[in-house]
Image (cartoon, rainbow, N blue to C red; front, side):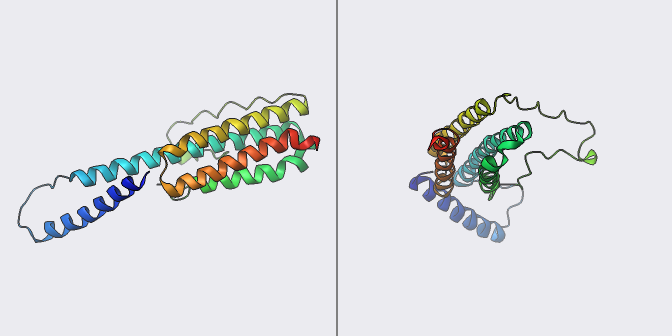
Length: 183
C-alpha cells in the first residue's frame, strides 16, 4: 500500500468516526449505508487478508517440504533443522496481525470441527538421493522467495518489509542448501 493508500485508510477511519457520531445524534430510523471511505477501507482490509493468507500458504508449503525431506533423510537433520526452524518462524510471523490464528502446517481438524472428514493433503514427494532432495528443497526455497517478492507490490508497508525479510531469508536458505555446502 502506498502513502496514498495509507491516507485513504486514515481518512476512512476518520469518516467512520464522524459518521458514527452523527448517527448517534440523528433521529433517522433505518439501516445506514456505508460511506465510500468505509467501503474502501473494507476493500483494503479484505485485500490485505487475502495477501496474508496466500503468503502463509506459501510458507506452510515450504515447511511441509522440509518435514518431508527430514522424514525421508534423517541424516540431513543437523543441516536442515535450523533452516526448518526459521521457516516455521516465518509461517507464524506472516500470519500475525491477520484475521485469525495461524495453525501449524500439519494441523488437522478435530472431529467436532466438521461433519465430514477432510482428506489429508497428498504427501510431498522426496527424491531418494539426499543430494537431489537438497536441490529440490533449494528450488522450493527460491520459488517461495520469488512468491514473497511478487507479493511486495500489493502489501501495506509494514507487511512489505516482513515479506522482503522472509524473501531474503529464503534466498540465503537456497544458497546454503546448494553452493553454501561446497564452501
